[in-house]
Image 1 (cartoon, rainbow, N blue to C red):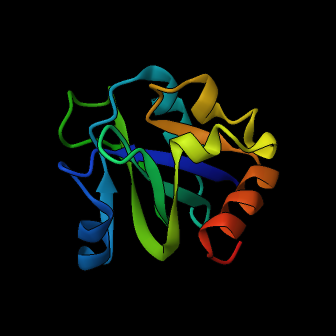
Image 2: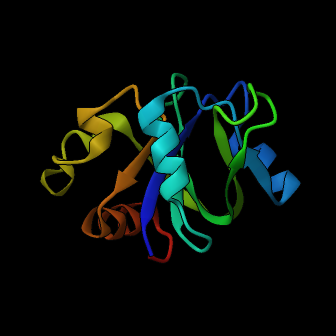
Length: 137
């Protein structure tokens, strides 16, 4: 199993909408590195839902429930999307400011590639964050 962090602006697609829908399409990704990360995802992988721009915090965990397939909002074959389902809401969201203070998260892609919307998370980082936000690892 691999771990990921997926960003969404909460005024565009918030955690609450994913929870209400029970499943969602992670589409609209228009960065080649992020596209490669989407293509690397496997059914059953886990991901953090990160509210970007407004809030800048991890608010929950998700499961990848459908592997990469063509993004219907893009030119045919150029971009991909995955389907996700919510797993658990964070008991206490973890902000970017807090992440920056934690030595065990100093190597996170989130801190190195702040604009990348789909990024990998190392297993040790996954466990550390899950513990902080009060969800099962």
